[in-house]
Image 1 (cartoon, rainbow, N blue to C red):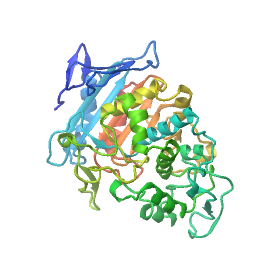
Image 2: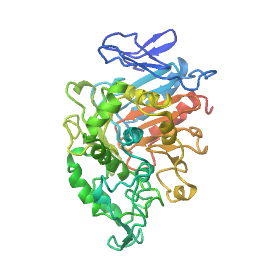
Image 3: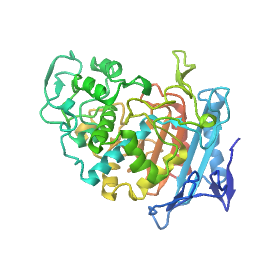
Image 4: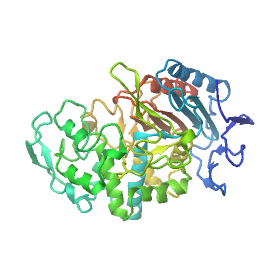
Length: 442
């Protein structure tokens, strides 16, 4: 089993570095190996005290790799990077290739992360809340006049021109909770869904096809809400709207705001809306599945993410690496550090939906709930569910979850589109193996 660039020292996994192969990720401190100054990001350790050790260490990590390898050997996916962490123990494995018949996967390989970037958008919005620029209960129509006086479908299954007035304005909180009325319903046969795909480009992310923000917002303003604001859960579109809201509220582009307020402070130098130059040797090819189930190239390294998009999607437009995703999740575990106040992190990662709203979704939440930009486990339905666990899945074949009760983090990056909200076999294999690794199941 190939585990490139991996060094073990004193029983810990040490991630490779351009400058020092012994730099490590440690609890309370994340050292970014790509930062020339070796800047240290101090984080308050979560769950101090009698924290269980990471059981994946040594032999058990091999078991995790063995659970994932069959998905590559069978041709289901070309490759993956998997990371599990708890406290000062971090283990990463890279399996397979960047593309079918391509170069070997690396621990620092770059992926299109899709919806596991939604929590980053939520943090950007909450940073503006912390600044006093926005408030959770603020109506958004002052900054987003395209959404003033919205119309609402009388019946989700009825004609899209049969509408009634919204009973109240859409708020910042509605967008964070995905209860604003725009987005995918559980019933994909509803006539409105075709508008989401055709006008708003809400299918699998293709950033070069989306018009600039002002043009996109004008199109959005012509699409009726699927339900009254605050009364149901509909998925995805809210986070593209939030990206525009951040830009207009801050006076910066969305990409510039993320770079200044999140990526630079956390040393997330591999995260952005393009792969950037000089990264061809670690950029993955993306795939979808044909009708016969065979892999079909969806995007090449020099394709949709090769240049800056006109519309920086807050719903699913970012690329990143496992190490950058770990840095972001450690920030949340530490209560936000210098990025976000702890009370806003707590709100973001806790259940924000009422039972009545949860009941309006039968597809995306999978019986769990939603905070601000991330799913939140509220009951044990599978071995990997832990009440309070938060995170999400990306439609490009990615997953990132955190259990705050013990500080465990599990990240999986692959490059094959899921083709629907119900996941893929490799995701379930990873979640099951990680649950065993962390001691949640046997």
